[in-house]
Image 1 (tube, rainbow, N blue to C red):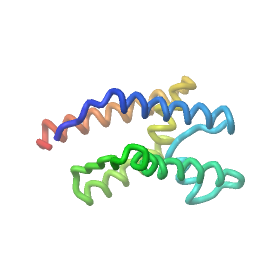
Image 2: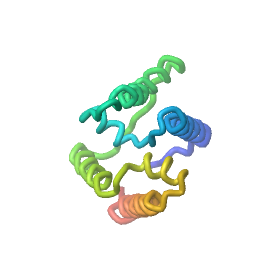
Image 3: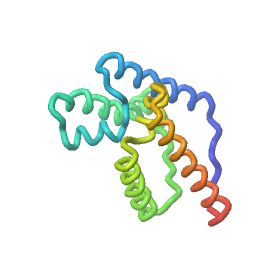
Length: 142
């Protein structure tokens, strides 16, 4: 398995994520954590449904607009089995619950606010990600 090096696309995506997080904070005073936004759509909180649904719709519409503008659909390659995806999803869900937020909330917004909790959370999930990739690529032989 090879990971493509895409600095321009990665920079552009990061810039758009940062800009959207900044605009959400400036306009509504809210932190942009994808899991919190999704959970607020599934289990609506009074007065928060509209902006959460709009952000979620934008996340869904993004690849559709990209396909329309570029004429090419984004390639999504998931090189693992369905059971691995389910187990990974459950583990991520548990981590989000115990960690008080997801990678986007802590990593993008929390670190930008110099939140000690977010810095510790980010260091923890980055260390876990590095260990997981190392084990999968060099230990198990993925």
